[in-house]
Image 1 (cartoon, rainbow, N blue to C red):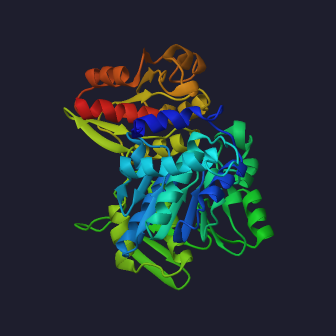
Image 2 (tube, one colour; image 1 turned 120 degrees about the horizontal axis):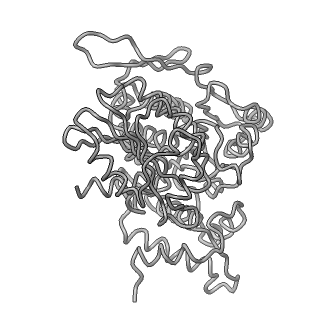
Image 3 (cartoon, rainbow, N blue to C red; image 1 turned 90 degrees about the vertical axis):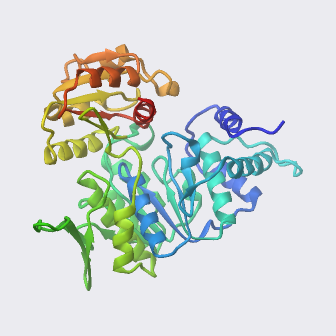
Length: 433
């Protein structure tokens, strides 16, 4: 009997003993067995600590506004696996993903070749599926979001025409290192010699710049080689911002994506497309910036006059951006947080970044999130002594959000954040209530 997509996803979760196994040997070997070629005429690979998904969305939206046929590979997903692979603006359907998985399974097992079985991780399997589908879609542009790090990430088997590093901050220390220099070196591994490397940090780690210099990659830095700034408000006119480099400038509508960081993400996307060559015109850039959308990035809901914001932010850098947005757009009432995070995250650093902006904390467990999940009592124990440590405890995100909404009054704001799992659970809850 043919496997469903759910059957396949269950299968690929089990075929490798580790959920993360950094390295390119296995995926490269299976790619060769599949005979994979380039996934598109042009490729942009997007790495970084935060802002990857939004930057991919801006690149995708602008390129599509310019009439390009675009594929985008992102991770993780929020509500359905299909979200990870988009072709021409549409999520891949179950049948397409199943066909890709069937081809990959035959290749990794060495069927008919006697080459021996190769174990793949869940992410490696999904990356090959995206590349297999992209190659068959005759794309003008493929955008690949790095899963973890860069140098040893599965997406790095493809040589990009432009590499992007959105930001470098502390996260995934077990795999990438304990400081920005070590993490920056891993992320810089997506750069290619004599190709553009677009950097979203004003002050990137020296390890990134050294690597770019060593391989001959042309580094383009935000607020050094390209610039962006919000324009002064004009009465009865929508807010605008300006992107510029030497000899070129464009006045653009503000992104519909909230948070101050989204202006930087949009600016980096424009720089990447201009570095790619055949750049979109100003009208196409404006259209793409205005249309770009990513679920779970300060996504707004409303319940009886209470604003509910759902965000995937899960590390201190993301929390600082959330705090900046809360300061720039204050609520008229109290701000209540629903916070749930995975066991390997710097939750104390996250709370410290937001403590002055939150009036009431609701903590939730993530026990259904695999080996990195944690129950609420263990989570609260890790937060002892912090502003959130004495927050109300709830078994799961739905229960925490239920309690926060029940306590809230019109004009209050509820911020739900801490993980993609947290955001997904909140969106499931809000879809049914």
